[in-house]
Every structure is written in structure tokens, then in C-alpha cells.
Length: 427
Ligand code: HAM
Image 1 (cartoon, rainbow, N blue to C red):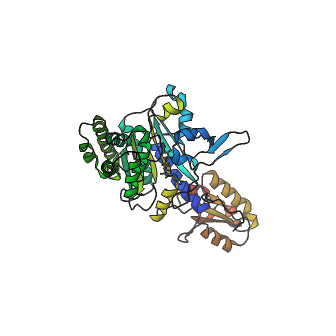
Image 2 (image 1 turned 120 degrees about the vertical axis):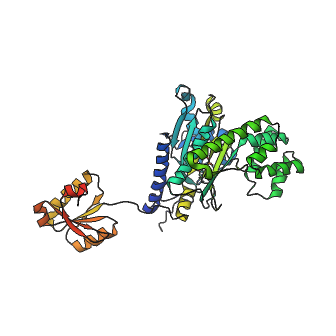
Image 3 (image 1 turned 90 degrees about the vertical axis):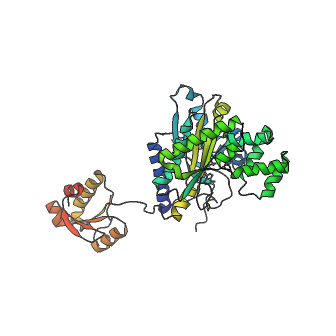
């Protein structure tokens, strides 16, 4: 090992890992294209202030921040949403809505390294700005799920768990939770699966809920949407949001993802800015951390940019997804695809061989040639292990006649052909 190891939580991408990164990146881009999103990017370093106010304590505690040589407090971006809101800012006023933007930034969080969580990751962000309709929420989740489908995963592998912060908010208000304590109550529900029940009850007790009401708050988390609505008769907010969610799930089903999503009140999301439908995607076996998370954040634009615009989006990381693809045998391994290795049999054939290389490359084929002429047997062996489809041999005789000998490496068959015929695929 070199004495300079990489930092904990930071990855080196050797060609095999890079192949997987490219596989994921290609699926992300393909989905963004199919769903009509435009690409954007911002700077990897932002002012610290941008995150302090809006991301909430969970991310702020994980910032890579420092004071730069000009005395500015800065941070490596831990998430993309504040940058997006800053960039669109007041500009959004003059733009045709909704705006659909995507980006694939590398993000940095000083987290404890564990399976699925590192200190840097790439994250697909897809956001829709300027749209209130619940159909946009459904379309957004469909796009996240389509990434998984394109990569070969199914509804048996993954599930999107969906809730709505307005439901939780209304129910907690009914139970007597004040606005000042709401963030703590959200945090208890967010961690209800991980923390022991007694701890959850105690934390709710600290914000003024007696045992009975604290127990009720926790029992909300196991309800279906219909049970939840029925448990709150006469609450207009809950009735309206429940109707929205029914439209949402019906639209998801029509878009082909009926089996992929389920209502789940335990989904709150750690970030402070969400205001409506929120979701997280998990592997069904529950072995890994969240694959993707997002939701509606209708007040972030007014808080950061002073314009009142509804918005929604998600972040979809490459780390957990990579683990899942490996577990399911779906991860790409080939780091390149070579069409041919062109071998000059002797020095006198070099010119013809290199011209052939140039013509094949000019026609878009991936082609290499050995830098040392002479040992043809060795060159053919190297061609085989390079993963190329064909070895093309050119000797003085072939060069004189303007042809080449093509060996299909998979079955060893050989044929003589011209470059034109080879490119046309007729031989
Ligand atoms: P987030 O839930 O913090 O949301 O992150 C979204 C996804 O990024 C996670 O589900 C996970 O796949 C990946 N991720 C997060 N932290 C790490 C880490 N330390 N290592 C590996 N992967 C990680 C957001 O970031 C929101 N800004 C998403 C959003 C966009 N909401 C609206 N628009």
C-alpha cells in the first residue's frame, strides 16, 4: 500500500468501480431525458450560511467546512437543494413553469463511514419547481423508480415508502404538540424504527405529551392511509391531504409503478425544509440504508430567495444503489468495450495496419494496436484477454491486396475482408 492512503469515506475509482459509476450515471441521465429534465450544475463550495439556515441540524453537523484565505466561512456542498434554490432564486419569476432541472453532483458529508454511507457520494437530483399539482409528485417518484427499473431491479427488490408531512403535522397538533416542539416530534417519528419504544415515549414526554398521547402519536405510524383518515374525523386538512394521496397513488399505478409504492407514516425525512408529500426508497429486505429520498418543499424558495414558489425533488445516491446492484448481480464490470485489436504482422505492414486503425476509429469503432511489432502469437493472446471482439491481422500480402484477416475471438473463426465490408457488417 502506498503511504498515502485515501481518506476514510473517500473512494478511489479503479476501472471496475468506474464501470459501475458510469452504469449508474447513464441510467440517471437516461431517466432525466425520458422525463423531460434539463441539466444544471453549481459550485462544489458554497457559503456556510446557505446550509446553516436551511438544511437543518442533521446535515449541518456533518458539514466539511472551513474558513478560506479571504476569511469567508465556506462548506463543501452536502446536498444540492440550497444551491438549486439559490441559482433559480428570483429568476424563476420570468421562467415558464414548471421548471424541471436535474444534476448529478458529488456531495460531501462528514458522516460515520458505514455500509452505504461514505463521506462523499454522487447524487442524482431531480427537482420540479413551480408546480402544485399532486400529479407532479407522482411523476417525480415514478422517475426515481424508473432509474431502478432501467437498471434491472423490480418491485420485488425495492419499495418507495410515502408519507405527507401535513398529515403528521395535523395529527400532532390534535395531540397538543406545539409548533416549537414540532421538529422534535418529527425527529422521534423519523427514528421510531431504530430507537426503543421507551426512548421515543420519553422524548415525546419531554415536549409535553403524557404517556397516553405519546402512545397515540407512536401508534399513528403503523396506520394505513384509510385508517389514518378514519382516526381523524372532521379534520379538514387530513381529509384533503388523504384525497390528494389517493390521486397520487392512482397516478403512480397508471404510470406503471402501482406495486412499487406504499403509504408509510414512519417516513418523515431528516431535512428541515419538507412541507408535503415525502418519500424514501428502500430495498425490500431492509438490509441497506435509504436508496433515495425526497419530497415537496414549498416554502424553501420564499425563505431563501423571497419568492413564493412550490417545489419538489429528490436526491438519489450512488452508494447504496451500487451495493444493491452488486448484491443482485446486476452491476456492470466491463470497463471498456473494444471492437478490435489490429495487428501488423511485420514492420512492412505497419503503415497499412495503422491506416486501418485510423479508418475504423474514424467510423466510430473502438480499436487498439500493439505498440511492438513482431510476436503475432503473443499479440493474438493479448487481443483475446483484452476483451476485444475481433483480432485483425495485416501482413505484406493483405496490405498489397487491400484486405485484412479478421479473427472472431469468441469462436476462433477467420475470414478475409475489406475495411468497407467489415464496417458494413456484411462479412
Ligand atoms: P438526503 O436524504 O439527505 O436528501 O439524501 C438523499 C440520498 O442521498 C440518500 O437517500 C442516499 O442515497 C444518498 N446519501 C445521503 N448521504 C449519503 C452518504 N453520506 N453516503 C452515501 N449516500 C448518501 C437530500 O440530500 C435532499 N437534498 C434531496 C432533495 C432534493 N430533496 C429535494 N430535492
